[in-house]
Image 1 (tube, rainbow, N blue to C red):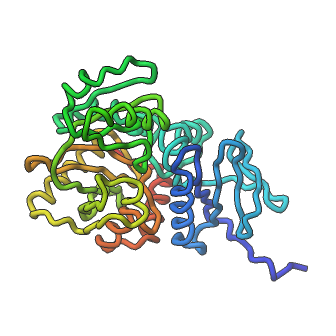
Image 2 (spheres, rainbow, N blue to C red):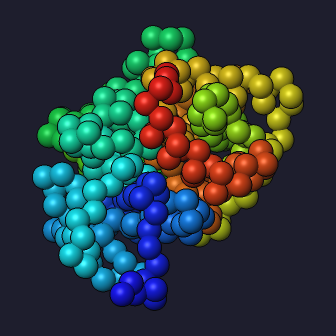
Image 3 (cartoon, rainbow, N blue to C red):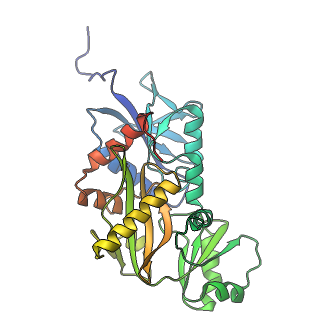
Length: 341
C-alpha cells in the first residue's frame, strides 16, 4: 500500500542545489544569500537542496539542518537511501571557491550546469589587477594603481609618487571590503598593506577618485542582457566598507540621483563590460563618477543576495520579483541554446 503521508516528487521537477558558504571571510554573507534564494524559489517547480561548502566538508542540508555528505566525484548525495543527482547549481558563494573560478571549473568538468560565469571569467574578474588591465584595453577609465605581491620590497615614496594621497589599499582577491583601507597619510600605508596581505598575497593600491559612487547590476533576463536601475552609495564611513554594506551604515538610493544621460551612460558601460568579459548570471559593477565620467572599480560576478544587498533592491525597482530573478537564472543555466555573451 502506498504511504500517502509522503509527498511524491514529480519526475519532471528539476533538482537544484543552492551552494553557499565557501572558504573566505565572506562565508556568513554567502549563507545569507543562499538562504534568501532558497526562500524565494518556487518549491512546487523545483526540488531545492541547500548545499554547504566548507574546507572540511561538503554537505547537503535538509529542513532540520541534518547534513548529508556530498560525493565530490559527481556532486551527488544520498538522502534516505536515494541517490540525488542535481540538474543545476545556483552558485551563491562569494569569494573562493565560488567566485574565483574553482567551483565553475569543477562543475564544467563533471557536466553540471551552474548559474554564475564560467571558470576563466570568474578567475579574471576576481583578480582586480588583471580585470582592470583587460578593461583598460577597451578604453574603460579606472583609477591609477600600483601592484604588490607578498615578499616585494615596499618603498612608500615610490608607491605614493604614483597613486598620491589619499589612496585605497585593497586585497587583490577578496570581496565585501575585507582587506580594504583608505590611507590618508604616509604613516598609514604600511599597516594598511599588512591588513590587505592578511586576506590575500596580492595587493592593489589605487588612487582616490572623488565623486559619486554607484552600483549597476547587469543580468541576462529572459535572454536579453540588461542593466537594472542604478544605485547611489552614500556611506556614513570613509568608504563603502563592510559596516556600510551589511550593518546599515550607508544610504543606498535607487534610482541614483543622476541625470538621465549619466544614468544611461553608466548602464551602457556596465553592459559593455558584461559583454567584453563574456559574463553571465547576476553581476554587480561598481563605478565612481569622477570629473563627470564613470570610472570602473570592480565587478562582482556573484554579488550579495542578502536582505541588505543591492541586487535585490535594484531588481525590485525594475519590477522584477526575487522569485522571477532567481528562477530566470536557473532557466538560463538549464537552457543550452542560450548564448550568454
